[in-house]
Length: 416
Image 1 (cartoon, rainbow, N blue to C red):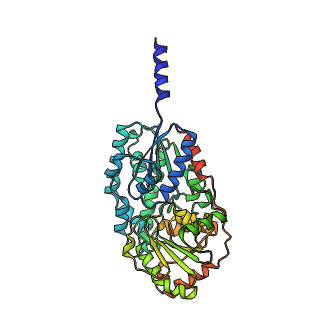
Image 2: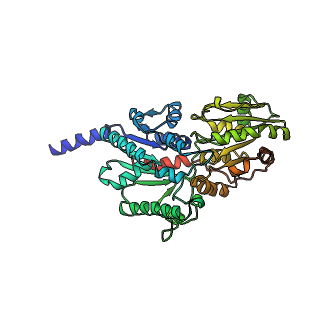
Image 3: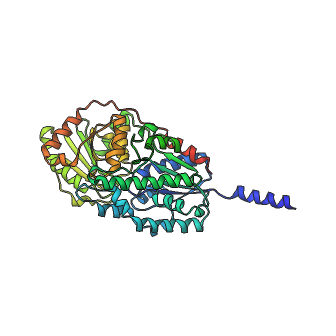
């Protein structure tokens, strides 16, 4: 009788649909694009897997377009992107300090998450830079009742020079707390996946008396390689994309984009101020300015030879169609341009440690892009000259991996 009871329990367990909850960072749209690619590969390995998404705008825009299931509790989340936008001014975002001042939002969102996993059993929770969930689970390990996988494309808070010794001490303190959490509760993460390769990790220290970041990351993470979510287009596909966008073969198309948050408006205005000077130098130049979902295109000036668009689904196709680009220093956009082998200028947000250190390090490893500081763009003629010079640049980038999503999914599939 006992054996029959155990058998029935086993049959019920086997027949229950498997479920995963995906948490995708709302600060920019890069996380959403790569996470959708990983989710699609994960379903190929587990066709019966149901994936729910706990996410905020603008991530929900990408998920809805991709046909993904957004959990109803998502509407209860406090918006992190709005906080980041409030912290930014004139292409300056002190990212570390902004996150330090986000505690109330993170606590609120963790409580929403905890209610969701209380109400529904999930076999796996995937957190792509879900800082709130990772931190508070380590502080309250008894709340973990699911397999938990952590994804990130950078490791280590780094101080900006302007922050002086005080910021160096603060970032080291934050890093030390993370290292201590991981040492005490190694079992809490069932997988730690770095979106990239070991050489993409900065060769720096967590702080005075703390380990080397790359050495520690290699010892504590698995590496999926970069996740683009697409195969680089062929020349024929690129020409077809240009035609769909309404550009002739002899047009020189410059795409200007600042990602999915609303912090890039100042850069867009500065670039648009240089468009007349750039077109005087190179009359064939045409500009496509993409504001993203959180900047109203109508707030920007109008320029001859320029189109302005808001949210553009599958932006990587548009980037692949360009002859040159100007981007903010976000990792996803810059790596999409790298994968498509397009010349580009990138302008990291001032005081944004990730864009100025982590992203810059990775792009230098690929030999991609030309970094320009925002201060250098005050003179429209200087920006125009840099852009025209970039059009003529010979591309010799390191190839970007195309199997990152499949590799990440294979690591996650083992946890289901």
